[in-house]
Length: 210
Image 1: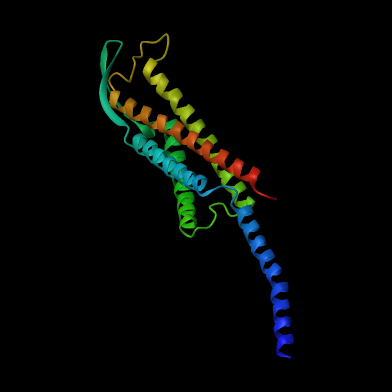
Image 2: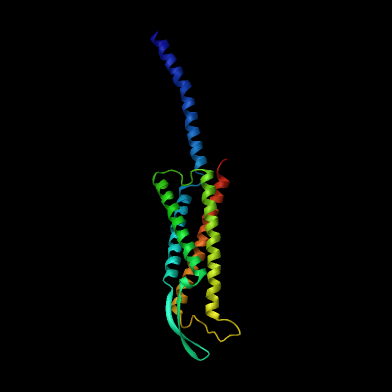
């Protein structure tokens, strides 16, 4: 009787082992489906978020500190002039967009870092990937439009208006124009980083299983 019991137990183990193996394979397959990217790609995604947040903060801080007072000669008269970023709607647009992009990047950074520390996938599902992709696309378009609008105003300040005696305002307001130029540069750089993040999400979606 003892021999028969041992044989039955061995048969049960033999039957159960393939089932356990199948469960392990299913878990491994699910993990692979959730993480089509390797750890290095996820770390790169976090790095892009950090850089985007930094460039947005630099663009924001450079613009809000752009103000200067000086004098300019118009038709032979020396007139006092004052420049400040809040005098231009285009510059206000840059400040608003940079602030929102910095907040978006910080939120995504906190989510990604917390998941990396828990050793879970940074992007949990296709729905999550689509939402992040849509956000990155929207903010990328917003930053490029803000940078383009501010560039037009800055170019006018540097060249004056044709057929008038208005001078190059950036000569007496060099500090102001330099701050604005730095802000515009980092605004366009933020757009590039957001676009790079969006490309990563497209690759993730193409590799993930439906």
